[in-house]
Length: 467
Image (cartoon, rainbow, N blue to C red):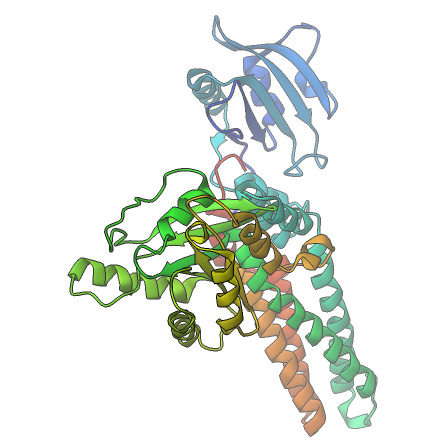
């Protein structure tokens, strides 16, 4: 639970820079800081200063000067937390930071728990729960795409969609429940035709938001790309070429890669997690067999599969391998890119012959590369980038990245499906009202209008201290 009567403090910057910021928030922020801060202008009394003012001075411990600092004052409700807050900008010496925190705690503050500043912002109405979760996503974002999604959510793009849905459902739920109060008089306040239209519209939007989770999740966590093929086809060489470093061991001895090797690169603002796998072949080597088993697991987990074969392989052999991969991925939406490697060792006629005879299906691409010479890799990068639906990233469409939101939207859709079936089957209004209220409840869970201590605990304990 929130410690609203306590004044909390914590560093808000990571160790390693030249400067650091220590944040204090709560009812005694100014009084506590006044005990250890000596402004350059001796006439200044912190408790009398307005918000958004900056003051230069020294932090003192009895007679010792700890550091020269800049102290910024924020007055409630115009602060990050909605409370009176102070931010102390000091030099980033671990000793200085530790000493300032020690003085603040001796003065009456307590150490902030992970996410407690943002939790207070939520309780004080500075942001809703989905916006609070976006703060953590912004801190964790590593690419422009994941940053853009988090910024859109923090600025209320997702919240506005959810609030609109909830408002429409609340209006009709109120009318239906009003009808129940006048049940004996057989009156109808809620137009059933209009109700069906609204339920359909709300369900379609809930389904659309839920369906965006698959894209949002990979953009947030990186798109997994499995590099598979027979031993010595150039898988490790390709990984090294894409990463532009010797990440994987390369050898002419078949079966060198016996475990998966993973690393990430960013292409057009999107993170891709490349997984170099053990070569697919029949083997009696126990360790290599375990590696091949892991390869199958990584194929299951991947969104994109790069199948590498050599330009000296026959079209019949390559078609059989493509068919084998198709059987592994089944009817999933995984994308398959067939890479014909070692083009530097064969003629253009050989390439044209394979182009004519390799069988492709939808969502499959054939590219010719030389991992050793790093040729054809730009085409591969372009194809990987093209797989992501860029229209969604360039628009203001809301994309779901949070599993909690996704599950809530699925529950909303299921509740509204029952409402539609009930309206068609003309079931009693009190049962229809229950399902509408269920949908309203799940929408409220997303934004925090309806919540529990358990949900809040799970969310904020994953934040970093100082945020």
